[in-house]
Image 1 (tube, rainbow, N blue to C red):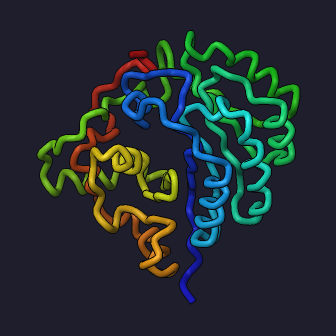
Image 2: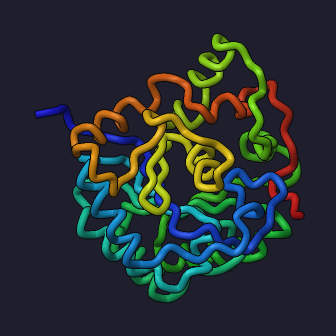
Length: 265
């Protein structure tokens, strides 16, 4: 029997729709355009499939797009309670442009201290930040606010990773970049519509057809050719070496140019 497959962060994307249209969006929302929400049924199937492969994850995250655009995701947060022993904390990421619906709040409260709402505060664009934090305080829902405007922006602001051409870096430079990549260091694994990767940029650029990932870069949850153990082994080694997407990535190192977050198109 193989060793348990334990992840640090398992991030599920239930929607590509967003209330903002950010020029440097790392999830490429403006390029996707008007994509439909992932259905509740599909999300439940994906959750069942991924937890059949993964034994445990510290964080089970939901991010968009903007998750609070949906008034039905409480069903997913409630469904995830059936897997409560397989993750430490539920993480919800929002841009504070919309408040969660009452059903969201009711279900989120059931997690107690096992949940955290992470608010990306984009200043004038995140006009619900105060109302949202008041709501969470009133309902004893843990939250954190990350400042993305003015001076001292979180991570110094955003980088421009909207280009997909090979940047011509040497193999040594690509390996060094990969070793220090935030996705690798923080072990961020992302899932969208049955496709699972160790890099959000690689995953979403692949969905857009901008990048063709190597076979070792992804797992198709519904692939009937690979066995469960084969899929688990691919996931286990996602971060062992650079991905195809690394060749076009600007990287997130300290010397890479930063831009103000959430500049709108």
